[in-house]
Image (tube, rainbow, N blue to C red; front, side, top):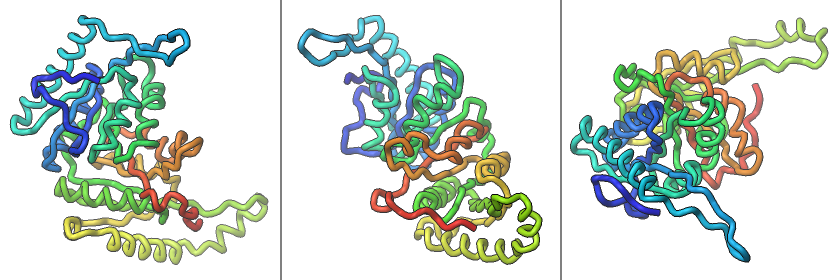
Length: 320
């Protein structure tokens, strides 16, 4: 792995900060702007990473090796990184910016960088194919497996330059949502914003359609909402720290699918925060229907957090 850029040195492995992936596209420029502001808020450095995706070649009786970049390819990569650094420095002249040039593919390169980062940022669309294809190949993989929170920034997000002062987090009682709540509180504190803790619920639907009418009469919605609201207030207070003690929190209860409820609330928000159980394997790859739906359709940046390792085997939260 080589280093390029007018800061001359890549961030050392033991340091922490914000890492952003760039590829020269407009969407990655949006991610770069968001990441730079996030680094300023946190008082940490910014690492701008470009992955060249050099192809592997087979060797007789040996392991595959990567093609060495030609001087022309290396120069283009260096120019791209230099341009990114200059762009950031224009807006944030005092921000410490480092560059990292990788020969491997974007997802594994950023996953490796995430091991030593506080936050990883990526655009929701890049060069080569439809938005959903790029999102599936890079962003979802990062959100599922990164060792730190991942923020996916849509290309047309206006919240960076027109902040709304509002962060939205989905809570459902699981360890994953508890982690998301803690990070959401921290993000709101950093932005001097309010936090909306959203609890979306749907009554159980009986298998027998003839029972549906009876369910409408037996479900005490007012009591259900009151208990759930009290519960959300309780877990919010448990999640607070000294740094987030004064963050204004508004609890919203909605009888709606969680993904749709989060997307609706995001229309007046700067950021959506969701939790990923991130247990690896097939489930980790799928990320979860709610998180994945929000990633694909949100018009504002989405932060995906992973539950703590010690909570990776928690039981599913009880249904309403």
